[in-house]
Length: 186
Length: 349
Image (cartoon, rainbow over the protein chains, first blue to last red):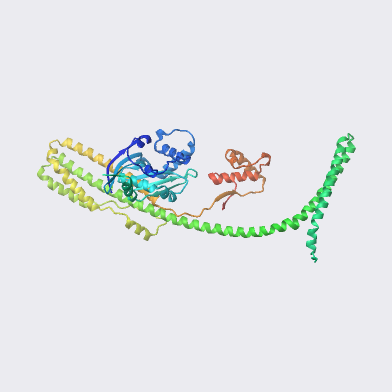
């Protein structure tokens, strides 16, 4: 498996990112399924926006809850917060066995060359959701594209504000298969 | 075939008769009171009304006595004995629940101890990883300063090119004499010294000899352009200084980033062991004194805005000091806000 032609975009809005011509993990995941947008997911998006794109945050509704969640996440991240760049869009070409998959990902937080940090707002424990939703595959896509090999998911519960963290080990297996399944022959 | 009934069984058979007799008596008492009150309400003679009122009260008091005697009998012979089964069972369940709670507490304590060790192991590893990074950065920085110093000194003193190899050798000797800083001490609370040593051995160590060789190579490279730089020594010194400052700032940034990343990774890697859940509540120990009641009322009023969410009453005339104390207890459980001069006990469930 080779990763070539990696490009970073630091100031893209989500809509601009969506227009990038490449395949993201969420697109792969919803390849044969409809994309959901539940109230819980909308709340999660707001927490992301408040914390990671504060300039775009629209200050209305559930503001207190959003602020609590964001504050807890910031607490957990600690000193690393000041070194993080947020909402980084990355594009790469994944090449495997004569096939090429143009990949894109939108990384919540990262320190260049050192660590990727992903945020999840969820009532369910990571031990259950990582495999169910394939968060490990999502982060492995980021790791492959950036060359960073340390990745962490931080979860905050929107009810109790309890947080937890899990390290995601690097494994390219899912993406090697994805290139063969969804990529184009070179 | 007839069945002989025991006295108790015969007594229970008569219960229906007794009940019917009582209800007839109660009904007739009610009718009697209705008649008396109707005639009394129609009369305007004070003495007569007074007498009628007394009679009506007596009739109803007598009926009440009969009803209470019946109910007492039902309570003593039927309800209370029936409840005894549950009460005895409840005692046993309570004993078992206490035993279960004690086991949960024990398991929680064990999980806490295990988690403390896991957490400290992660902190320990991150600490020495960061120490290694700090020591390496300081050592490399120190050698880089020597490289700059050697070059600046040569330029400032207008050293001849033929003297440079000797000058370089002098600095190489200085490099070789340099030692890295020692590791700072990690304050262990839960880790045994054996386990600490085991973990320490897993952390990659800084190889200072390699750093010295890199610095020697840098030194040689730096002097490659010496002859040309000598022609404009002042500008070359200024440029070298600027480059050194940039490198230093970059190294400081790297160190801060790597330290913060290691700390987060340590926290994330410390997988915690789930402990059984124990619900802990604070309860105010009730004292049956006027001063205690006054204290509760005063503090309830002071914290009324927060306490009201714990109060559920339909009529405020039913709000009791006990309910106020409970609301203050819940406030203490959820927020840690305790009031003075009362005793709290922790209740585990």
